[in-house]
Length: 143
Image (tube, rainbow, N blue to C red; front, side, top):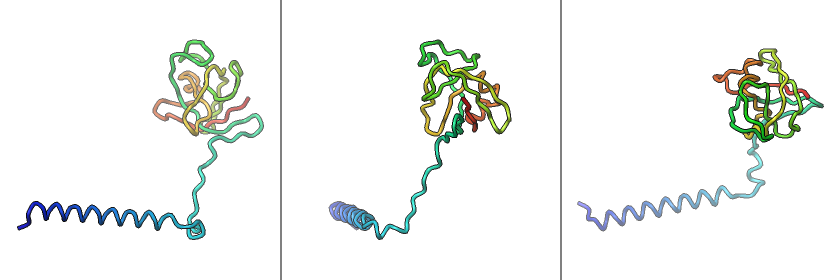
């Protein structure tokens, strides 16, 4: 039968052994770059691609209360949010999967999620066939 002190000693020894093994793994992982040359890093796919006046990427459906331009958000209007286009500019958003397109006016800033090109109001999203269940779809944004 083991005593309380011997159980504590065994637990402490196991803990220290684990720490030493962990530290040894850390030291062995921090080797020079020449030893790690066989590891290749995967580069992420381009977030958005711009060809002339066309931008290829993902569009999403969004809901908001107030827009960055100061006007009230209207879910029935054909408007959208874009990161860089000036307010009031009109763009054609085409969904290649459905072949449908809609002309929207930029009145907000966004999308703030990596990989997205444009956020559409529910009316604009419905016009190109984007549903709530889909969430996002590939689009072409032409100025």
